[in-house]
Length: 101
Image (cartoon, rainbow, N blue to C red):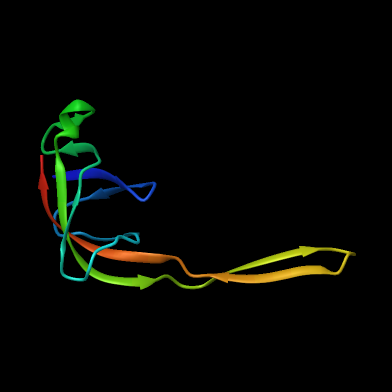
């Protein structure tokens, strides 16, 4: 059994017991989060659209963190222009407990 959920502008294929990294959620470590925006559910037969709209996926927040640093370097030749910037994306690690659908 698996479900496809949408959160943070991305879609994730999840099964019970999976751990996924999603865009930062405003939840404490150890709390339960519910994903209401379910795109599809497969429990032997594929359910999409209105059938999957009633489904939910619940999970537990395992940790909050930041990803590895990504270096952004802008450069224009002959003009002496260069700019270096770094970015660390915040994430939430979630363990999928149950697919209700």
